Image (cartoon, rainbow, N blue to C red; front, side, top):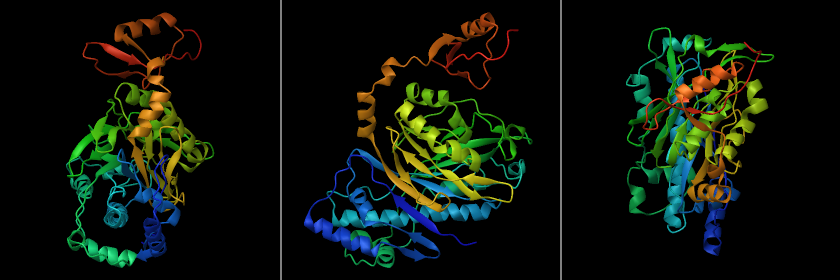
Length: 424
């Protein structure tokens, strides 16, 4: 199997640009040399217009990368693709490292602090239930192999720089082996469930030492009849998670979710207003039909209504004769602007952008929705049950109510109460 990879960098809002003649001269040379290079069917593309944001990122920002791939029913092949995506970003990071050497005062961070892989990154079966055959505990060899990707150790950086970018730089820094590290968002791993007939669709966050920092198990299962397409019944082999999770990281406070969760805004509202998330993660394998209609719209809506960054790693293209994913991995800022995107919706590769904490603060300060939000009400669980009984016409789906502990017993968090159907 051959691959062609792409890396795209998008300019964040409000970044300062370099203006000196000396820096512009070097940018022009680097843009020409880095325009298109390939090795082992891997291509790294960088355009002159994008180099401003590579060179100049504010001190309050940190770089992230979102991946796009087409997983198949082959664990080894998918791991090889994921490894190439990590190595691709290493090359990109080394290019930034060179820019830091040339412009030490103005350059951006040498590499991403977080790389996000999509749902089902390790395996996509030919039919529902195939994933049960490969389901594994988090301390098993599959997940531990992916954890090892969080630690980089590759060839000497001076060799890579000379080979990839045709540059010659004399520096003690570049004469050593390049070792770097980053967090990984592994969204949608087939974790062994509570019995042999079920698994958990688990979003695993791995730190830069290769340790599992947090896990989130998908709460909303994809039981849907796609118009003009096939039917899906994720609940037939997957057990739903029960806990909302948020975790601090080098790129801010993360709120992990998985795919179909995207259609349930209450979850994201809780991540923002109760768990203080700054970056929402939405690894997905959206179908072609639903992706074309709703993917970007829903992602931008979640970013706008929570004033968070959204990083959405996507499966792309045909996995087999029966299953196709929409693709279009995105990074979106708190204002709802797409700041990271691959040029090809179906390609395998990464998009890069910066998380700007000052932008988060600015958007939230200028539009302080947290102070006036009335979309939630906190009541006791007993009162909630009484309310349901009294209305008699109220039907609340099981996955709408989320329980959590305020430090008091028997307290619930109720996003909304909706009325459906006829009176009992």
